[in-house]
Image (cartoon, rainbow, N blue to C red):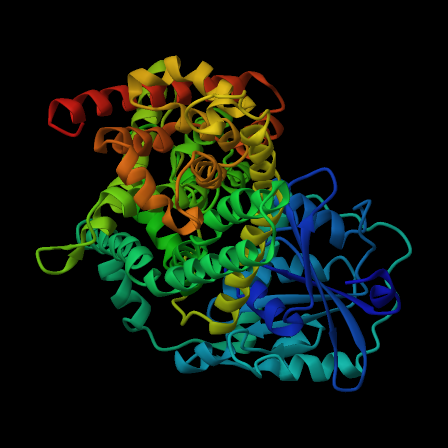
Length: 627
């Protein structure tokens, strides 16, 4: 979104509790006209979008971080508070506040609405999920609600194509008053003020809302199973198991298409370019490196599809409650679950999400074990090694063996994280885990539109990594692997005489006890930038190792299967379960702890775990005949 587009547009901010459907409504209103970044100086996500109403009015929409109150207790909530009070240095005071509420849980949302009303800003109340409220027999008298609050009341359905129609029509004609010229001040929150707000919410509910008769609703019947200590845990295990099965089963076709496209492109380059340094750069460096990583995009998107769908459906907060007691046994606060769950996508946002943990010690332990959660960056490495060494056959006539192995690697990361947390519990004194307090949202059908936007954003992030850091690192590795040229009469692959070959051979004695050769040693070094770079690095190294294969990017699996032992492959898999090969994660820990002490502690203990576990795995595999 350009500066010119934003100038002259109505400035609107969406304010609401977590899980009220605010972001789904934001996606519906703005579509692809969004800009996602971080606020200056902090790592809180900032979402901004533009829309144009049917009457031609341009509106700039800001999706504020979700909050239960304007009296902030976390960094996310502080950002929201500062923006709606005009105290944020980089954001002008909004001209209009849209307080988005969950119509099925209006009582829980009204406190924030009353706090916002007290600011004196022009505002409107949006009853989101109004269709679900109607289905549940909840009758909301919008006129009475509007009179009680003194603000317009609108209805929306954030997951329906035309669900923002009434809101957009109202925005087309609204003429909000000019906001106050100076920053607003929040009143203090003494006990009496809290009680007054509670009584006011009760009064408004009596005036404007007629709730469904007291009977066991569908959500309650589902929760009886989902939150059951036995059946709920079994359901969670089945969902995770099916997710990892799908990563291999569903992605086969798209991956073959990408491999075929990469192969055709490499053949075209070889046919139309003269042999030389430039052709080697394109085929052995760019295509073998970046192309070898790009092929795993379908598997990463399938993984994110499951995570986004579970989040959108309202299931993930229930999984947090379900695992709260289990996590308490290893000394973790129940609040640690959401950051650890976020780390399955990427450890960086998971580490950022620890800000919601009030206890510094609980937060620190959660930060230090977050990298053990199997993030999506490990998936290309896992997929390469599993595809090369684990047969693509079924077990018990139903389960994909490769999916079983992948599931085992995820479980291994979780068990390791819990073990580290338990050791930390023994090493420190604490009063006990903090109870997990979290609003359970209503179950809802995942929005196809929201899922599509979420997958698009993650695909763009991955492609930017492929086109940015991964491509740059693989091109650098190509240069180190190609120069200097071997001396006259030298034997063996030319790469052995290059800078990269010398580096790999220098490192090889250190990693030889865990089964790694010099090619793997080369790949681990650039893999420190990002784990998935290791796949592209292996592609580049083997492309320059004197092989006859013309398209290493799609034939890397067979190459390493022929060159490595099963014991080596298993050792490398275990290495990536533990090794902290991600500079972004180390930087995030430095930023969140405001010290280099804890990033260094984390890096040291994870490398020690990785080396020890790989050594044991390699030696056991050799003893069992995996050499």
